[in-house]
Image 1: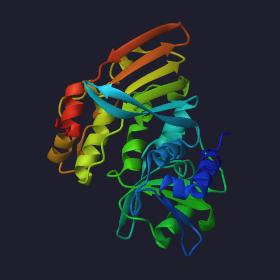
Image 2: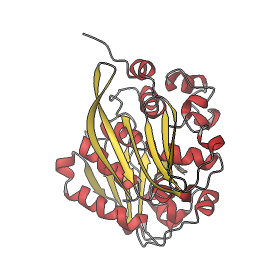
Image 3: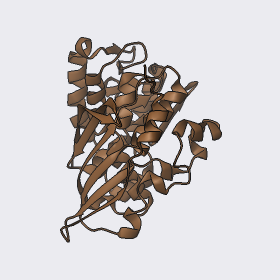
Length: 316
């Protein structure tokens, strides 16, 4: 069976080798665990963001960078592609493991989840597990984890601390902006899973979304990066089987919270994700090629107006 941890580790080792070029910094803790700072105390870079995204997908997907325009405004876009959508997304990239150790709190995603089986019900549905001897975790946080946190992750994954690698970046940095937009496919796959579709039937996927400008305020950054997908994320899937009633519910526009920048929704929820309906976390549009019939379907549309409002772009 494919090992998302072993495949991702190859990318992590390359990131460490190119840390100066990527504007990141690797730290070896007293217990031997490795922490790679990608934006907490370092600048980070576009290249680091792309590699970070590839690691999130367990090395089973590839992220690239391009430039497109939203309205008359040129913006950086990330494109992602995978031929293993279910495992790359639900088996690795999904932010499904909240790490709480002492005062340290971070949302965990990436390959290590396949070792810890967090959340268990999701891994049971996709029938995937990893038995690698190394664990690679991605932490969305503005604080680097210490020995105690890394020991907890090692114990949860059943590996030695010397074989645990953590990539860390807050949302409010360039790596944070890139990697959130790089989840555009994952949001579609996760939404389909929530709606009851067997995501193992999805054979390949490609997606794109604009990269939000870096904002100094973390809450504003969370809003803008989510809007990148909600209002301008596009996904194309190739599946075995198509269920119209399910697929037409995928785009974010089907949510009652759709229509305003996510920051406003987040603010009304007291900055508590658990108080927000999950159906808003979805791409703006989706195209589906049903491989069983050869037919292709499309639903949803992007919103230039909300994206530009969210990004707070001003003319000069």
